[in-house]
Image (cartoon, rainbow, N blue to C red; front, side, top):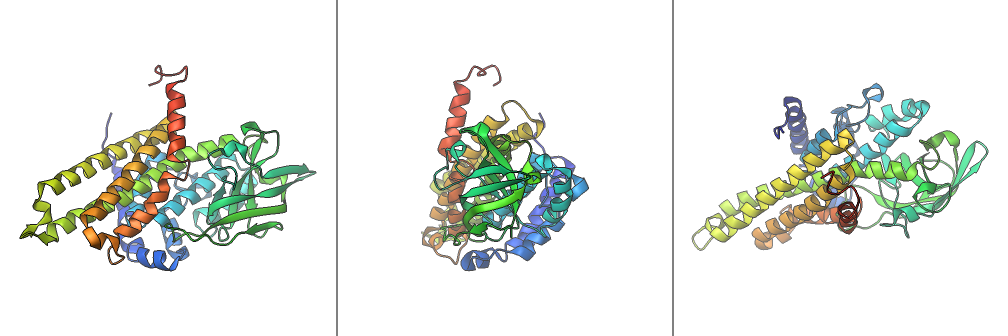
Length: 385
């Protein structure tokens, strides 16, 4: 068991770290303040391969694994967790098209997605189907060589701006087996969008409802076979959970680093506050928990890449633990900054707002605990521990 990154992995990490420092970090506060979707900077990230991290190379992808993805996303999130999270979502949608799209679709869309000429969104959540994803109500009815979709999706990152939407819809009976996956391009008649949501954080990416009213698409826009949609969605979420966990790691690491610097500079009672043992112990705990979370994310990423039988539960564990720890570390970093942590002159409050939603999306942390507990009580445990 070698816990050190390979030379190639360190190279990807260094490139992502430099890019985040030079491109994302100087602009992140402005994007947040003005709710700017940074298209030019995202396309610069795509030039480095960050828009097709685990897409095959014949259509412009890099063909890396989930560990490399987690490493890259963590580094991007040290500068702007909101923008890094959109990179993750775009990659998930592109990967689904790469794995389950027909060859015409792959060749038509993926070269433009991996360059971010086109932006992509993933559409699973509905107003009445959040944690109960298998209960989604968006309908897809076969009509000759087309499907006609009706329904709406909620809280879609990139909604209204993205060019390509991967949509889960019910084409069959109730339950997970009746769900299929479809690709809908912006501009398709019957596709519209709600107002841009006014959010606590994640302000560098638009979020809106995606609405389908007699939205007619060719049969060839289906991903996989009819009834495969829920399986595709859940496989996508395994990787998405790892990336959101990595976003939490990056944001929390940035805040820990800033807290270490601040406590060495801030003077109270005639000495730097870093001299006080209570604060030293606090930072030691922050660093230890963050390192434990990182190891869990990396271990789960290898499991997902290798298709291990327990990949889903390991991804759930990593997502739940890393996002809980990440938010805790950022909150503690804000406390270490005192009143300065609460004002926008310092970036801690932005990280706090961005990381809070990580405990909700890609499956709430309560649902992660459901996945974990089901595994513990299954016939497979402890034989596959």
